[in-house]
Length: 53
Image 1 (tube, one colour):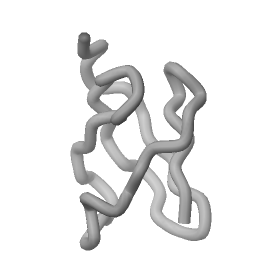
Image 2 (cartoon, one colour):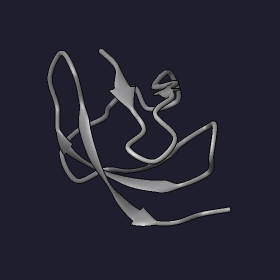
Image 3 (cartoon, helix red, strand yellow):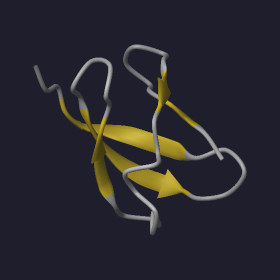
Image 4 (cartoon, one colour):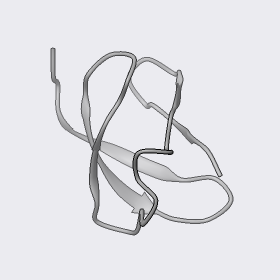
């Protein structure tokens, strides 16, 4: 399971989100952008909600 940030292209650490599902809001631990999880599976897909820091 991994999620690549669409903004900074780094892998996001998902250990803080054990119950991750469609619609969850998470933050990239590299660039601080807020993301909405759109697809859950082997590879997650997320879209930008807020530009962050």
